[in-house]
Image 1: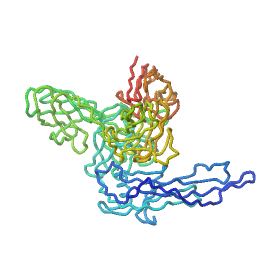
Image 2 (image 1 turned 90 degrees about the vertical axis):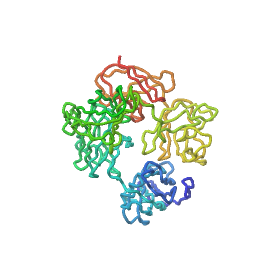
Image 3 (image 1 turned 90 degrees about the horizontal axis):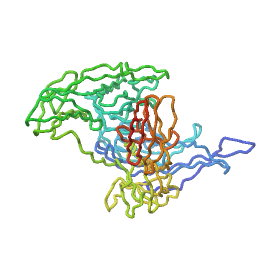
Image 4 (image 1 turned 180 degrees about the vertical axis):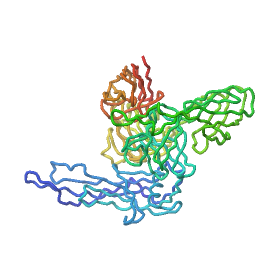
Length: 580
């Protein structure tokens, strides 16, 4: 198997006449050199089970560009693209993607989409050819790397499902379902107010808000706008129609239970469950009906604002009956409630649950006890641990950062650095004496360029990463691009209020506890886009949040006009906003 670490750096440089004269002097700009491309494997069988796992990595040497006069440096003209084709000479269809680093990693779903775009039949082993294309301008011939061949067996795309992505194109875990595979996707989601999102079909097509009109609820695959929800958080039933290029959201504020029990249900956004607690007098089956009144939002709820854009007008949302019927193992959703029979397992306190997390099958169950669920165990890959970054004699796993862009494997977090040995590693595991080097990230043994501030990672055990000086830092790491950066924090963070026509940054001072900041803020009007906390007095890295939890690059925290005592702990990822 070929490995990324075996890069060869001896490449020839060709020179051509450049294009400028100044005060009679003539300067010469070299052509960019070609890259040497290395693939991590030459045979891959893709399955749905490997859709979110990394299956292929490619790495390459850097290209060089020089100018004949050492007093000048060439401008940043270099552009690199990864090209994939089914023909070794690239004479046929080519799938191309722009690249900005020295490596590219595909997960199974991404590689399967490439196969689909090239017209490869599912479950048939096919040879794919990869190369790099480098350019410096429209009038200069591109340079190409060597060609790497990889045999790939794709799986069949299931176009019944579409993923809901957040504003960073990270999978949220929420999916929609097209029962007739006709491009009309439906399902329940739990979202914050003003939640920005995208929808990705199985073939990789990403749908977003129409940026030409700017009107909410209209769709396109072009541009860079996101769709967004109304300002009310909670449970929405989405109909996402890629044919008419429109979507709508039916807000369900509450659900009522009648029949053998009477209760009002509450919704949990994370689990996408409605629950109601009741006391059962006997075990056995009971019959219930579940209904309520929703608010239907679509493009007719858009109002043109004074800035030439659109707002969503809550008063235009249409009152719509909502109800469930069918069997407890296969609920139906509509406007008329039907009898639903469920089994009660014990007498005493029980919880009726409506689980809407699977868009293909909604269920009703009764469980023993109250509705409080234990905190779930973290998913694999949720955290990246930094053993060696703290003062411990033995390397410990008590410092970690959290994934914020899952599909791109990007992690970020605030870390109190005080490295005993001046270096550290990154791991996807949090315990164990025998290290799993396949889940470890360090720097190459011959890497003289990587520093405490930034650098290039390798997947495996090389040299430890240089640690920053003691203090508070933001770590931003991409395991897909194999890069890391650190940013020092000062005595203040800065609160952006999210108020229209107010772009000021308002300092919040450190309390002296590592990572904790506290102060008073006053909002003259309601926050339109939500408050966010920036690590610098500038539009740089920031945290948003909801329900007391902070998220890197997250949506703003919706606050009403008033004065608040704000306390933020960037290490724990928590905040409080107490109105005075």
